[in-house]
Length: 470
Image 1 (cartoon, rainbow, N blue to C red):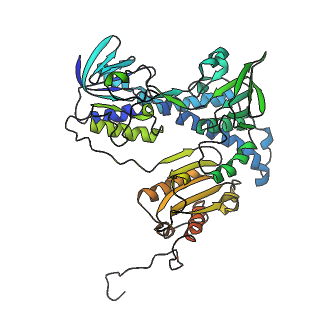
Image 2: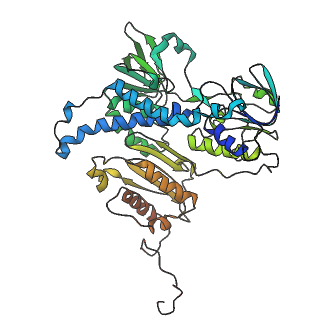
Image 3: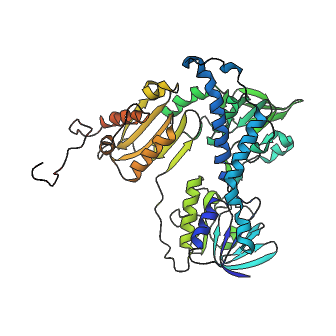
């Protein structure tokens, strides 16, 4: 069989690439192994955020008395109904991506693809020759092989939302973004949870001051055992998890130690490009092309920025560069943006503090325990840190653990993307009372380390063009 373009993987990157490919040809094949539908919609961002919303709503009962609302202690979370609600929402989100197989008919193939060279793919025993190949094979949860002995007591983000009910005690191993989000949500729903991680960090936080602010808040809800690998041992009633000077007997273990690119068995070694110790080729993030071959590696499969919006961008880049008349033009990547939907939310925008030389860096912060709008909603906690170029005032990055970080992070991402200075952003309107006033306070703190301005947040008006008004 010969076709113009083959796309391997029907997740976010693959489907976005398909949209671009259909701009230049209908002579394509979309090959997918396993379920049809994106990781985000099926097992990732969407069901986890649905669970978090329910958990946070239930957790709000703890502030009812403070608000003058009585009777909150009688509320209960029906876990089977909660999980059914999450699946109902999940099924709606995944319906569109899952329908691609039926819509494409014979141009969609279910099966495990393997490269046989730069222009050849084998699937279900049939070899296909293609002018261009886009690889978007996604990722899967990391689970140590030795844990197979514990059977269905080991859960992952791929299996958690399929449970009809949850056990009373769960140990979460891996306190990165996924682990922190799910551990806190489960604890807020009444599950007994303990968190373990080999690293002495949480949720991928890179700024030590943000970590110092967030850790005690999470520790009030979840016992944390950080800084040593977790060890598992079977007991009569469950699994004993030990690590970092503590142990916890759980009914089940949630493995949240990250995701591994699905590149094993893909046949990358047949392409003639250099592979590292993990079997990964070198990736140019602006083109996604492997060497000078008509082969592109996108999304979670390349491990560059394993986030849904980044996978969509990479599918777009690969799909455009796979066109027969494409000039292999590099595409600028967007300002890095990562958000963890814990409470308070965690976000990092632009450069991390460790990536900005200290001599170049001017930093400012604001403690949200003092923020009026956050105090009204009983959510006053956390820290925002903003970093700018000491000479020019250009915004470079920020990190935070604050209420509604998802919104303030987007404001800062837009500002950094548009090469905005601290003074430019201070000249923008800030309403009252809103959480964004905390951002203004942090920006004012940064400004004290910048070259003197005129002392005003407002920009001076230029000529209006009307002589009578100037």
